[in-house]
Amino acid sequence: MTGRDKASAAGAIAGGGGARQRIGLITRIAPVDFGIKASLTTQGTVNLTGNADVNGNDQTPTGWVGCDPAGPAQPGVRDQGGNVTTGGNGAIQGNPPVVNDPTVNNNTFTTFGGATYAQLAARASIVVPAGNYSTAPVVTGGVCDKTVLTNWGDGMNAVGACASYFPIIHATGTITLNNTQGQGILLVDGDLNIQGSYQFFGIVIIQGDLKTAGGGSTDAHFWGGVMAKNADLSTQSLSGKATLNYSSCSINMVLQATSPVSMMRSRGWAQLY
Image (cartoon, rainbow, N blue to C red; front, side):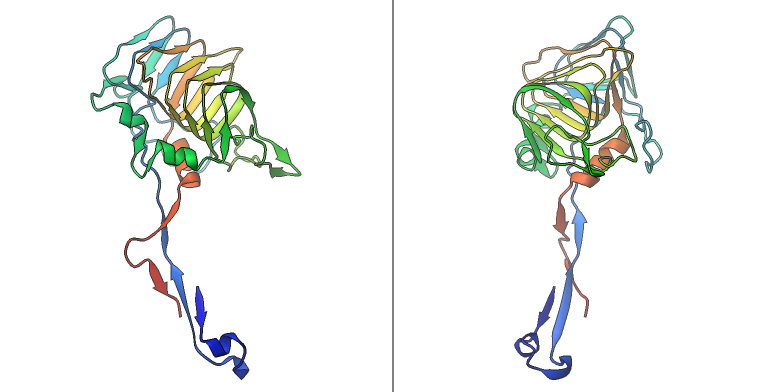
């Protein structure tokens, strides 16, 4: 910000004389603390069947670059004390694989450090009603086309035009995702159903139930952290080829891209000249 005296600002002083002063604003990124402490956080029971795998070991999404070294392993499932069962080839990995946390409650899924669920939903750049969706990156003239509501970024191609696009997506009801991918922060007011080989990279907050069913020769993937409120305490059903991978890199990338900027609390203004 530059300020001048009235005379020089009006050009009334020849030779550029007069007084002026410039100050700058010092800001910081203010990321939301979602409290993600596991690959899957929920209140209710969890049932894994088929080839479902919930993995709390820190992993980097395939093809991603610029990630820090893997951090410590997190629990695979963090819940309020509900039953966690596996069948078939279902597996849970992490440290520990399952942790019962009595502090998990309804507020865990609606109140975070720095923002609430409602505030995040109000910031969403993509809002969709209940329904079935296929989402994939859209590139027009070599540029990521952010006007398309089903373009949720490109986590599968690190050099793609939409690789750096991490939208906040708000689904106002129950949605089903089948083909192909998305990334960012996904907020779901109802249930989330994942079918086929759909992949999502980032943070997922579900106010209802999570249900996944893999298909074909590939897995249904989450890379990051999933929090499913499961308010009616019904079973989280993870079946078929369903894989939830904890990824600090994916979480951090999303937070850096979506966090608001705020002024430093002290010495927020700096004298430049």
